Image (tube, rainbow, N blue to C red; front, side, top):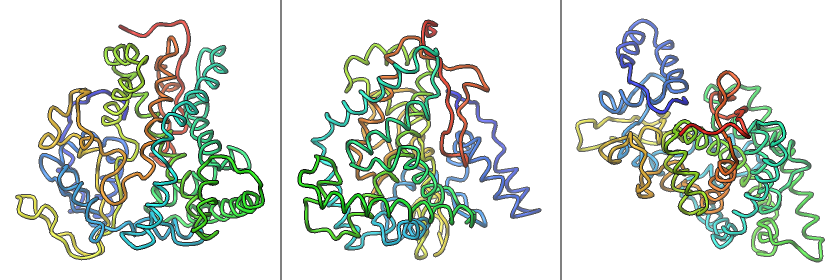
Length: 424
């Protein structure tokens, strides 16, 4: 959804309840479609009238306190919804598919050390330089297809130069990550073809990384990238090095361009805010706040899936207390939680003074993004370099509309560049 603000049409619950009485399958199919195309209005109605929506297929959680409860209680709400699929693709256990196990704690800590926060200036400059090269190349055409012409290439350059994982080529690495992440986070129906493509892509990726690891071990001098740091560390087995390296682009190559797309669109939809952001662009730290507030209005991952492992009363002690039975597929909605007026003052206003806990687009709790420090500067710096270009503007639809795969992953977003000035 691209609009800045939309009047709530309402009536979702009436239509859902009516459909449920006639055809339960059609009823939760309606909710799935609304979450894909009309999520802002749907969530507004759910927060007000039915903040924990129980359907025959899944339960949707929309209030800030309840979303953070789900994401904080990993012993109750597990990542079993997608963990086994990631394990199948990577050929072994992956920490993001585990909840508070020794392997999870150990390897998450290890990778946080490898992704040193002191690398942030270097990563920002890397992303900015890559963005400028791509924007320079696009300038003569007067437009840029931002997803594949800017956002994904920047992310893939960071994978190559900072993670030490270039892939055989950027297109192949991008194909691998899309296949695995689609199965893990968008294949709610369990489509076998999607699962099989994920396993094939994962096997190719692991084989490539094993060859690259052998080359690193044989090299006399190693670069200062994350892969080399893991090799030098000396206490991780080859299997764990390879699987943890595979996890880096899985958590980055789709989510970073997705966040760039959403943030850029939201800023371009707001002429006054855009003008202020461009004025602030000479100071990256000041500019970054515009990106995070823009992203609050349309986060990339609007829903985070979990499985309830045992009966649990969610929002206990409140009027919305609801028993979540063991085995329930739960969709926690950060996109809704960030507009809950009980936790986020004036949620419909674009404000730069919001504290970090109002921003849930990097997750929350046990599975919050472990590479948040480099990821944040890649997203913000790429958007900053884009908006520093004169005449950056949305093009009218259909050309300028964001096109998405599986309703989630941006695949096309064409922007104008050049002489035409932005609206004041």
